[in-house]
Length: 250
Image 1 (cartoon, one colour):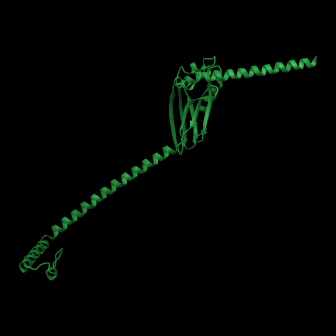
Image 2: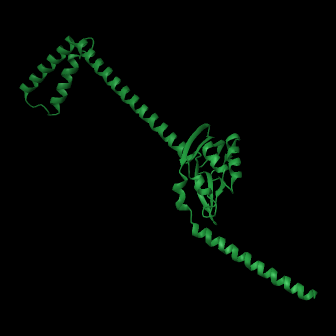
Image 3: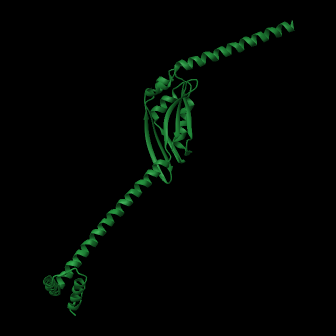
């Protein structure tokens, strides 16, 4: 028996005899050549067994390193995908408070803060620019709104999902110039709130003049004329009732 990776000669000869017995080798000369070749290979392996083992070990180490590198790359990619999925889930389900303008029936131009997200907005602070608030304070019909908006900056509030705050600003189309006055400077606001342990702070700048398309002065005039007709009809009924009472008294 030889050492290292040596192959016993008896085992090699036995293997050759088995192959010949099954008819794979019919030529005796070929069998002897194979036996000689096997013996040469066995001697070569015995002589260079250390080098062969070193090469096999090196190949094994390199293969292991390559597998480890691919596994590390796979883990990094999985972590990045998991992080991106988590961020996407948080963005889709967090609170989202935005300002916009709306016009109610009758032509009342309003400022609205609405939570369009899917979670509560906690510790809500709404800070409107002082320049625009000064314009609002000089309006004729909705000066009190400036006081309420200033209160939002100093106090902490909240908004549930799909909840909103609505504040009247002016009535475009009336005899005042409130809408024109508020349009002189853009509406600027900074909204800060907490959601799921994170703080969000977003700033908005909305030119009111761009919202002019929301205003329909013809509707306002129509509704006001309707109110005047109703008041006139009530006045006529009261006059008729007063005349009847006078006749009864006389």
